[in-house]
Structure formats: C-alpha cells, structure tokens
Length: 280
Image 1 (tube, rainbow, N blue to C red):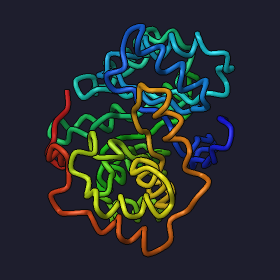
Image 2: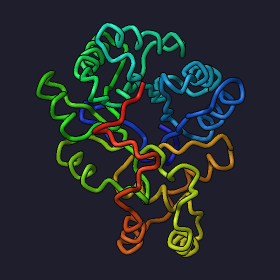
Image 3: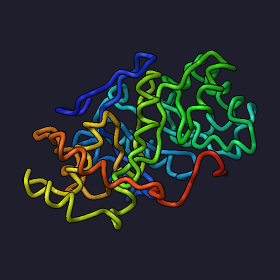
Image 4: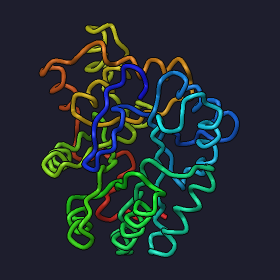
C-alpha cells in the first residue's frame, strides 16, 4: 500500500488503506493526470462509479502510473437503473471494459432504491461476479441495517463495506455502531460535507490551530479515529499531499467529541434518505 497509510482488513480478507481518493467529476485527460498524481503521491484506494462516467479515466490513470496494479484498490459502483440481475451482470462487465481492467478490487451497489425492490438480485449478481473473478470484494453504499440484514438472510453473504454519507454535520453514530457490531467496514463519502461550505469554522479551526494542521486534516483525522475510511476528492497535488498528512498527530477525546457534536438531525447534504431516495 501507499507509504505510511495504515490498512484495515475487511471481513473477506481484502485489505484497504484507511484513506483513498474520491474521483467524482475527475474526467478526461485532466482527470487522469490528477488521479495519476494521487497514485504517485501514495494513494492506493481509488473510488469511482458507473454514474460518475469516469471509469475510463481511472483506468487510464492506472495504466500511466508506475505502481503495480496489484498494489492498487480500485472501486466502482452499480447504478440503480441496472439492478435487475441480468442488467447488473452486464453492467459489471461494461464497467471493466470502460476501465480496461481485468477486475475491480471493490464493487458496490450505489443505492438500495427500496421502491424498486431489486437490490437483492443485484447483490446476487455481485456475488456471482466475485465467484467468477471479476470482483475481489463486494459491498454496498447508503444501505440501512434492514437492507443489509435482508441481503444476508436471502443470499447468505454479508457486504464487506458500506459507503455512507458521513461528515461532522452527520456523524452516523448509530449506523457506525451497527457496522462495528456486524463486522462491516464504514466508508465516508463527502467527508468534508461538500466543499466545507457549512463547516463550523470556529470549532474546527481552534482544534486545527492547536495541532498546527488545516481544517481538512483535522476532519480527516476525525474520520480515521472514528474507524471510517475517508475518500476525499482533490485534483490538486498540494491538497492530495495535505490530505494524506494526518498520521503524525492525534485528536484527544474532547476534540473528537467537539467535532462529533456538530452533527444534526437534518445534516444530510441533499436530504438523500436511503429509506426513500431513488438513484438511477
């Protein structure tokens, strides 16, 4: 893995670094350069999705990089409109063709879309794709405990990871606790709450100044100490370096509580409640 980045082991034995690179909106040659820069800096976990329309960009960055493919952990995600079993199988293959990769290290169902009620057959498609060697580890995004319990009950296979909205304004304490109790890793999307426009600067700035760190570094350290894998997006090499520089300090219990205390019931960025939200 990337130098100095700790790893966790998922419930299926696959290892992941505790911080990765989000790639939403990183596209084309400029996007490939940014992702290659991140890999060269030390990132080994790269997060993409079919709906980001940049799987090809990620694949190009992997090919440009001097880092061996087996040292990388590449993620993509199945969109809601392709959750029927046959469509899911084809979409997984198409994701690999787009990236020109032989396999994904991690492939996730992007949203449960409970009104459609097809996430179980989509999950079966991921299980079969893993058996055939197209995917090394399978998981979900934005699934509530009842969705995951149904997956395991009907297929006998538990997700290795659940990628959820998680940031200081929505700390997902109950969901994270449930993950821990059920040996499912937590991964944080929008770890800063998009663009940090709403971050309580006074609270986190005070902590950052105490540690001689940036607000971003303090927030990412908070994720790490929660036990969550954060996947911040950055196209800038300087910010990519900054976001990895979180392992030379720690937050004490009071500081962790101050940041966690910023959470609020309406903290979701776009009110995307997995119990009702539909993604296509």
